[in-house]
Image (cartoon, rainbow over all chains, first blue to last red; front, side, top):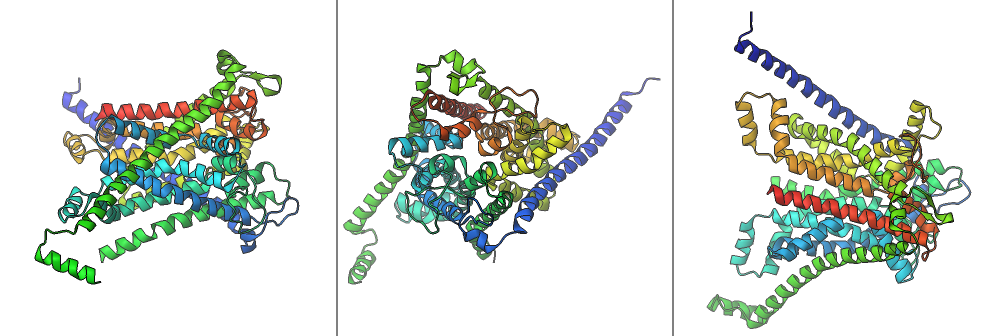
Amino acid sequence: MRESLFHQHRKKNTLALIGDKVWTALFWAGSLLIIFLIGCLLFLILGKGLKLMTLDFLIDLPDEIEAGGGIGPFLFNSIYVLVLSLSIAIPMGIGAGIYLAEYAPRNRFTELVRTCVEGLASVPSIVIGLFGYVLFVEYFDVGLTVLGASISLAILNLPILTRVTEEAISMVPQELREASLALGATKAQTIVRVVLPSALNGILTGISLTACRAFGESAVILLAGGSSTSGFMWDFNLLSQGGTLPVHLWYIQSEALVEDAKEIADKSAAVMVLTILFLSFIIRLPIWIRERRFNR
Amino acid sequence: MEKIISNTTNLLKNPLLITKASFNKNYIKNHLFRFYSLLSVLLLGFILLMILFFIGKTGILVFKEVSLADFFFSLNWEPYEDHYGAGVFILGTLALTTLTFLIAVPISLVMAIFSAEIAPIWLRNLVRPILDLLVGIPSIVYGYLGITILVPFIREVTGTSIGEGLLAAAIVLTIMVLPTITRISDDAISAVSQDFREASYALGSTRLQMIFKVLLPAAKQGIITGVILGMARAIGETMAVVMVIGNTAILPANLYSPTSVLTSNIVMEILNVQYDSTWNYALYMMAFLLLLISLVLIFIIRKLRVKGV
């Protein structure tokens, strides 16, 4: 006996239902596995390094030959370069973002500029490092410096900040602008006093992501800042070598002769991940405080 | 103080009267601000041009001594004997990107679909910050984990003595591009109109059928953008790759024998060569190649977006 169309259809439906259940289970399993692996990864990095961590390690000078050296100058340089590069990139990036979101007319020139921003955002970090190398080491002839590292890093961050700012600003409702303009404010006043404050959440999140990325960047620093430091702490000289913690980890892993290289590397990795956690926390703190206040 | 009071009284008498001085000041400030923001955006474009110019200008010099065909197609990279064939590195980059694509895209899509459609809200709110955190972890840390954990593991499983190579690099890169692809695809899937889902359910489809036949096609453009951005990151990634790829300028016999890619070779050799040498020019040409590849990828993304709208 031939099965009726209805029965065939029902069979197909049952199959589809079973398939749905099976696939849902697979999606759950796959995703939980990945989340579990990511958790393991974080635990591994932090666990291995934090066990041995001491405060001295963070501020001591590194030692080329004997065990027990610290990472002081490298950690200092990391923060110094990060602050310098952000203070160059943030005003420029936000300015460019404001232009693209508020002023840019819809024409070919704007399209070209936007392509440039996205193009610059996709330039591999090693190419920006090489650019920094050509500019500062060959062209200006200042050698591998903190200054060169900061400016090259700022170039890496600029397009990301621009895009984040543009996105955050274009989320601001049009009514806010109109209300401000209707009260007699100029366009600049509107942007600075109304649009930017309401876009602040998005911009801060963007800055925090950028800061994390900049803190961990190594290819740019290696080529434009070098792999060592001036060798003593609290050196604010812009023209001393600009090696940072990520570069130091690379150096330790590949070339160092110290016997406790492995331990230093483990601890440096943990310090970096902790700093990233701290950075993303501290920059987003104002957002949480604002949200809290609004919710009450 | 007195001036403010007099201004206020003036304003009270005639609300439309704004003192000429303050009007001028605001007018100038308004224009200065506009000028400032225009200037910063122009600076961005200028920087890109400068990068293209400097890298290209230095790189092009390699063709004074090496023929085009030799540079792109020769597999012989022996700088000490004046053989500058970048073919190995170009093939290496292609192979590594393909392998990363094959591993990373399915995993990222599973994650994206899971967090956009299947996961309960609390889990979704947990997944997204974790992915953000993964983006933040320095690439050098990934490389370090790769060399200390992944490579010994590969060595043990495959029984080779080295273990560094394409497979290790592709796995490390997968972890690095996973958040990029997942977040963008997740956003694209979440942005698909709720009506589509309801229409699909109303026609009697299961959730799975809805996801594969309605959601994914509708979010296709965003997903492709995410994948291209992820691959751009994989092509340009340097420090994580340099630690696990082995850094020898030969074609690998298998997935777990050492080789080299464009980025890793540049960073390994650039600090030790003379600036005015063909060797150095060849490295700059390789960087220029990377630059062009990433610009072309961005161009494709932009074309996609225009076509989609």
